[in-house]
Length: 304
Image (cartoon, rainbow, N blue to C red; front, side, top):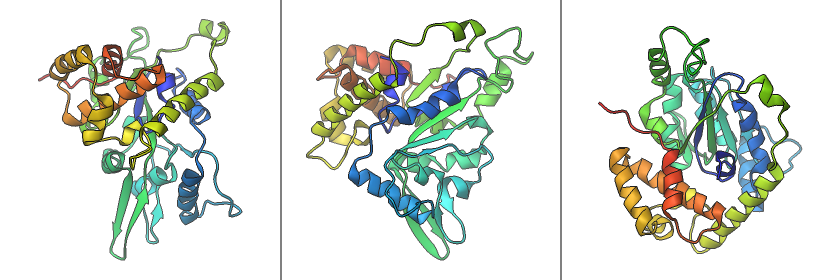
């Protein structure tokens, strides 16, 4: 199981951390190619948001999942919506698709923190003196960032003399509550010139997309009698029913929850990821191996 396979199932939030030129932006741009096609109902939802924003061309329904990549100088209204005549922001224009935030720490902190509520609820309420409007905002958030301001923390020959303090200061620009909402924290290794002449990967986007589609079909069948569509939307008793691990998995989960100081939110998000990993593997029940992989993607809370 690889992070590439996990990225195909919304709504999983991911941050990629690696040096400049490692391919973070390229991987994010390729993500829509392995996402499942929009269903007719989803196409209608996406098209309605685009219509309100004045971005629906020719009156035709949008059939492809949205991909939005706002610049880090974007204002709060641009990202979450607003204006004199209230319009949806980038997070709503990416509804049922991908919202890619490159150079994550370079965004204004208040702008990033404004995403916390819509990432939790899947919708954003824009309140103005003359209007209160609610837009859908169920996105797959993908973020990318350098490990430090200079970007070469792991390379002693290129890293600045302030390492590792510069990395701690740079990454601290993103709030802990926002990072707690991100399911996958993936370290991306740098790419050397020698890597560019290696043979192409044995598995392409088409093969990954087929596995993702199979996992989504499992979820569609699982939730056919419930008002949710994916593991990401399962909560409460329903999440317990579908994602409770076996005995060995529960033992590992209990030990890790204490050692990693998981919040209640982090605990439930980790269970959803583990259920998704099990679906991709074709496993009926979440096991210890699925819990272990889901935990490997979690960001540990800093110790005092």
